[in-house]
Amino acid sequence: MQLKAINGIIALACATKALQRPRVIIAPAQFGVPKDYDDLSALLRQRGHTVACAPLSRLSWLRIVPSVFTEAFFKGELKPQGTLDFFFEALDAAVADVGPDEDIAILGHSIGGWVARAWVVDRGEQRVKRFVTLGTPHNEPPEGLFSNIDQTRGLLKYVRANCPPDASIFTCVAGTATSTAALGDVFKLDAWDEELRRSPLLEALVSLPSYLALSGKNPFGVKGDGLIPVATACLADCPSIEVDCHHSDFVPTALDSIRLPETYPWYGSPAVFEAWADALSIN
Image (cartoon, rainbow, N blue to C red; front, side, top):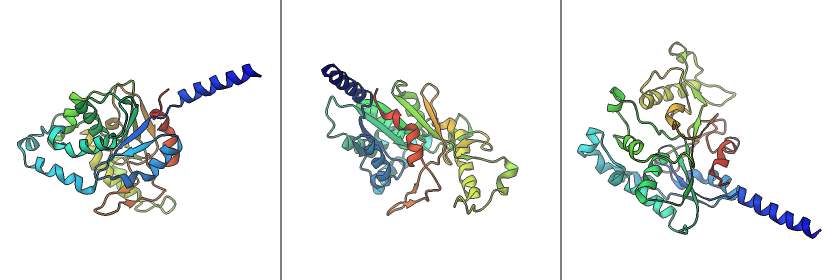
């Protein structure tokens, strides 16, 4: 009996170690605020994670405006330092009470993923043991016409060149819910699908220019989450997970975000969440 008890304690200790849930630091999407991630944070806490979201506000993004009037902006040579200090400072605040020996996991949504990559390198952060990105555009547009209209004005190119991810801790999650139709089929899509409570036509019209600008390739017949193509969201040397979902469940506004219906699943929807959540755990 005593031997069984000891074996039970050992088994429990091993199971606990195998299910280690580090503190999760959420790096929001552009104009995202902590409130937008309340439901996702709740799911993470249910799995045993402590969660902190970078305390950005809508107004925080105004601090990027001075960079628009610089030579580096017009040349497409912006660097994260100086341009994204407000985001770096928010991430600093999110980890302010993390102990020096405590493990953390970064969860970056959309551009928050590559901003957090730059932050880790800039701060020399050694506590990050897991790094998961959700619909993050990791790959800048190819050289040529589309590099000239790079929406990040060189920021993503800089991150790609100077902030290589550690493939042993990194996981890219890419959504596949919006595959653009062939050119001749776009306007055959329904303006409204009553069963899905969504507009396939509107989704196609939104995804086409986004896929084109980000990939620099023919946007027809491309798979992605409605904003970010799968190929753009995945890094060649890192593990990746494809999930059937859209980019986000909220549309930022000056006040509270507009919530999208449950028929529009995103990375943080419960069923989708379960497909990638284990990537945050340390074995």
